[in-house]
Image 1 (cartoon, helix red, strand yellow):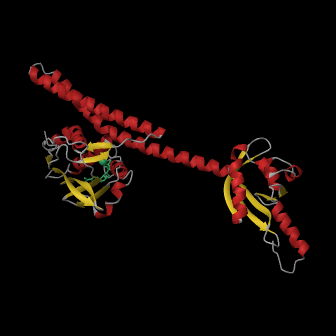
Image 2 (cartoon, helix red, strand yellow; image 1 turned 30 degrees about the vertical axis):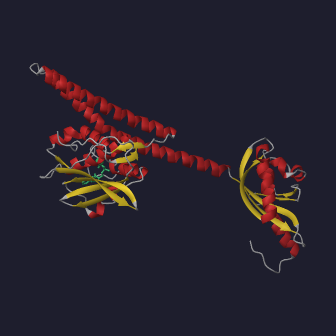
Image 3 (cartoon, rainbow, N blue to C red; image 1 turned 120 degrees about the vertical axis):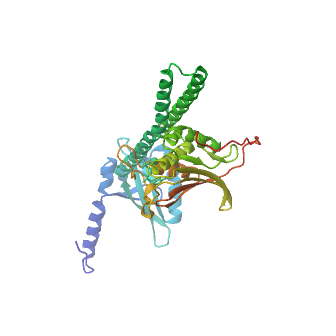
Length: 388
Ligand SMILES: Nc1ncnc2c1ncn2[C@@H]1O[C@H](COP(=O)(O)OP(=O)(O)O)[C@@H](O)[C@H]1O
Ligand SMILES: [Mg+2]
């Protein structure tokens, strides 16, 4: 369709009339009192009233009563500013509330006084439905990722339960096992089983809470505790793989604000990756150090987990943090450990850095905001989590 300057005015008016009448959004015009002076065809389709009915109405009759105060305020604003864009609700003849986006301009008379408003209102129902399903899909995807992560993280405590139960059975089957030793070992392994079981309970609770939208509570925690717990769970693997553990972590010294179970998961992921990385190397050393560091003028703990494993090639250093990236055989790696670790560290306002020299080893450094000790508790120094 073309429109030339030499078209007759009547033709131009007719063209604009049909354009406005057939416009796919509702168009209406109001006088100064809010009475409807014009509506196009789409208004009748959207609201279910006939044109004659609409033209005798005041626009306030088309809004649900609960938003009338906001509507009055909108009128005042548009008269003052001349234009307005707002998301609102129309009330159709059958009582349906229709979400709409309304764009309004004010037309003035020859003396710059208010004459009327023109509004274009777009039906947002389809858009809202799409937005809702996107939000829902996003939440489902996040739950899916967390479920996959929880399944991954359940493996470690589950392993601890299986191993401890097998060792218990082995001891019970040895008739000549010294009674006192049997009592000690039984109590040690059952502690391990109940510790691992509560880790698993926490993971499933976290999944359930996430699905419901509950946030984890952060409290003052001593980094020593989650590190010790992680070492306890991996103790068997460390021992059977002849891995030497070095470094010293001191009790009641390294305080952060966080979630103990999540931080334990972080160390489990890092330590278990380190064990895997050293499975083919001759020198097997795992070092864990915590040093104070000032970052951005604020005190932090820099916690370094160092191994003498195969290392990470330069081109893979970013990839390793991506969800589902793994170089491990099917059934062994899920590729979720480091992506979960990074998101937990981010949630704790921290950072995770990777340095590595292929063939020599890898260091993952966690930078976590330090907090003062919660109470002047006596610092009881104990050896680093070490090979037992
Ligand atoms: N300490 C490490 N040394 C060498 N490579 C590592 C180390 N930690 C992680 N990686 C690499 O990063 C990948 C992703 O690790 P992760 O996210 O924990 O998943 P997964 O352990 O299931 O493979 C590993 O498959 C491995 O290639
Ligand atoms: Mg891993």
